[in-house]
Length: 256
View (spheres, one colour):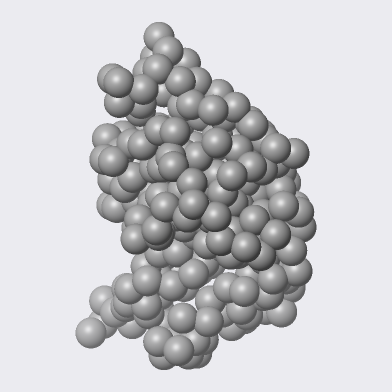
């Protein structure tokens, strides 16, 4: 998931607090497909089972063999030599038309149209809906820990590049929102959702991408960051408050 970022970022990086110019070694200006998947952590799925919350998918997403997968629908990627820019892979990865659902009884929360952004901290944002009503068009949903990122792997025959190992965690404010939606206090901020893998198509002119994991400057973070745990759904709160999640029932929507 760390193949991501803000497309508007200038081609510069920060090293030891000093801005340095850097030229990209490869660019994919228009992502044309493949997917982002998350192998769900047993701690997350066990917690949902205990709370009687059922995970599901929306749109073009799939859920099978313990992994949820979201097709990539657009975005861009710029790659720098590892160690020259942090993160050394930047861009923006879009997943329109798919998402994750969490359902308990008649209460359903939908998280859709994901966008990956490395930032500092790295995040995954998306649209939030509850009871069929939009809570926020774009809110930060999960924190991404790039310190666990593995080196980029390429497959020339398949024409793909793969990044795996990024840890996806629920923010404390997202946990608060879900707790209120499902009438519990058991969902904790910092809960590990799973480990992400992203596969992107390489353009014909790019035969390879630079290798390098976090030890050579790869990833969105140089190590675990407490900010990754506490950052979260501030935009959701500003957009209307956690309470919008609560007590909105699909059955009520049908009556309306």
